[in-house]
Image (cartoon, rainbow, N blue to C red):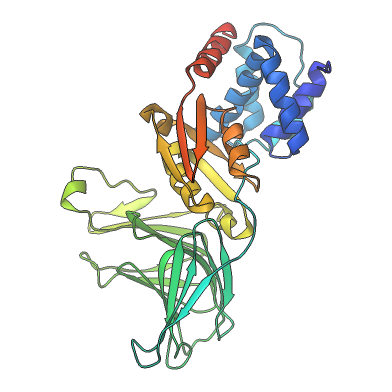
Length: 366
């Protein structure tokens, strides 16, 4: 194996953690980590610093790194090459995969007169879809989503029904507000860009306004409400729970009212919620249990956990396009997991040897 200087490896690790490592560089790093316990410890220390910054929400990553250095035994100042990368380490960034950027849809046109001749556009799992409606409104459908509208769309009204996730860039028409029906909500907009996530199996409907103005009409809900959104508002509506779910707390970010099952907050970076339409996936301290749901949709697979403890591991980062297997190999650098892929099923379990290596390496560094 080629001998690399500490400075060269620090630069390579920085490239990896900032999401800029090529596939060849990633393989080079993996080989270097596996070459010795000391190399693994070095990588883990840097990774822990980066992750700690993301978990704390502290965007002064350089200060966090300085604090980490004070806890380590004296070593040469080998982190000089990290300064630029650490400054952009507000979140832990990894290359990731979304299974290609192909746009694909199934379109079904109903018979005119039956249900007003509904048009159904389906974006299957493993694909995303972009369409343009007759009024010029652009719609991106995420994997496993369905959009329906009448043949008479843009006649008397502009109305669509969504099951799944979609990003809308609405063509302006003050006389005809654009309406999205999602679960028991109606979301009305004029010239606006916004994202709606409303998968039938999810417990929430999430609306993120990018620009323009949106009104959420919740008059048909069990606790009626209406609200206007401003740009960068992020609203989470909790669907009514079933009897089996009543014992579980309904958590949602931001400020909520006891009278309505709604929480709202302003977000600086709306791209977290819209990056999927461009083939990226931004994760913000999300547990693997939630990531698995997205992975199932993105890659058209079923994810099975053999060990519950893996579900609690959290990740933050910008994930970019590669293959499913490459994703899982990357995740192995941050969690002690092993996996198998067979006929569309991904089975993940704890790699006890890897878990012990991580634990021993971190103990040795204290």
